[in-house]
Amino acid sequence: MTSPEIDYFSDKTASVVPVLSTVIPDSQIPDALRAALDARDLEQTTFMALGDELVQSLRPELERLTTELVQRSLRQAWASRFKLDGD
Image 1 (cartoon, rainbow, N blue to C red):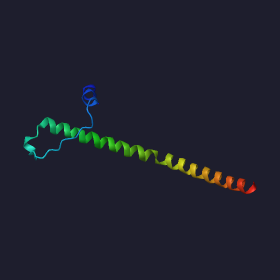
Image 2 (cartoon, one colour):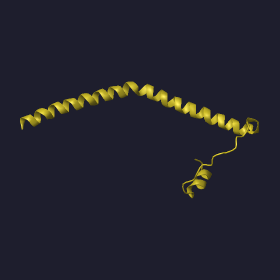
Image 3 (cartoon, rainbow, N blue to C red):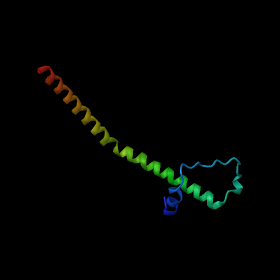
Image 4 (tube, rainbow, N blue to C red):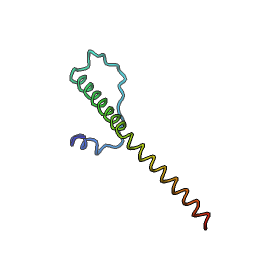
């Protein structure tokens, strides 16, 4: 948020987002607003694609770490099983 947005929202309690009850024809939507909404949609799409790409690139490392964790846990469980039996 920008500083004016922070100032505006900081003194507000839980605000309710108004819902438009009237359908606005496309011809009445200003070009600047349409361009801003399209830019926001493109930004969201790009952001989500970046997230997907990061998850895909991290997948091999996550699988390796998961495998190591499972193997270590099984070794510890096996060792503690025999430690308890020996007591």
